[in-house]
Image (cartoon, rainbow, N blue to C red; front, side):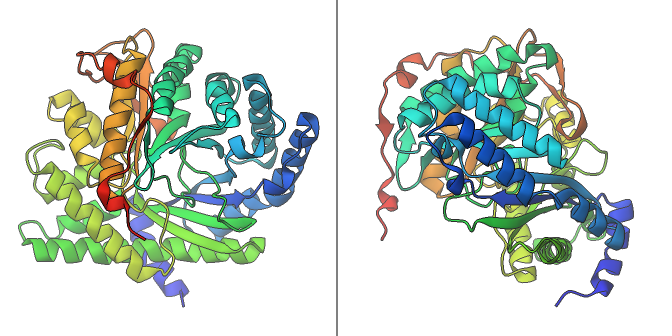
Length: 454
């Protein structure tokens, strides 16, 4: 049982160390909305979302005020729209119409983001999958709240290189259509390997087809709390360091568990999971890179960074699973560049490169995240970056992802401004050698040998 004394214990974390519940995400199945008539489908989608989520924001605000716990975002995730729109959508524009319906429903219930404009194509693409993928640039340019994700690979199926090639073009097209705002559309688009069904974090959230009709998932974050805790054990050995991270993660997860249970009870919707991810913000003192520095590095990216991040990720998970029986989603440490001032400082100091970030993704909870690259980067190069990252996830049986932003009109040495939680980012250099022939081969990279478990 969770009691109010545990909330009181976290007051210092909330007031001085940037502890927050990053999101309450309401997952909604749209499977019962499927219709062959597009107009009817849009009406059903709008009605279900607005009915299911009508009290979400109000309840989140109530919990925030009652317990004094900041709840930064209230979000919705829905069943991958490529599945829902398959019968009704004959063109990319048809799918874009659904995106606009999702956006209108999200605005009408007052949420911050709505995820699930998604396709699952790790082994192959249906016609609907490809239509949705090709609609993404227009859909993201025409909406404010909608977030899109595409799962391109998995440990069991390998990597769909046809889809990887297409997504390089889609990311470039999305950047072009939103170039007036530093190509911000790409900040709402992420590609995955081994995407989880219950992730509450954007832009990759969708409501998996194995989930219940509705579910409450909570994402809690506390890089500042971990950083402060480690300040008290400077110079101690790794055993003390690990115990400190684990105990701190336990306390942070208990806060998320409390919020999740309260939201579930008040909304009358089952509780799903708590995602304990150290998700940074641009705020000073709310940085995963700063934790790595506290562990003993001059800058994130210095020798030892991958080992330090592996330690951090593992201890966060160990503390979380002791605090809640239902830890899920991505749970671990995020390493987005634009959203983490310490990461930005490391890039500007020359300590952190794209290649080092790729190495770090082997042991973090997601992948290459919120990285601004030159706007003239070729689509095939972006596809090559995606393929590399997906290979890490496929072989290591973990979730990996890519959210890169080719900022049209800008190059290395300039800065992209996204605002809010998305922050700002220095444009990072990209390896200029060609991978065109590799990307254009087509077909599928087969699953690794260790996938044949049953």
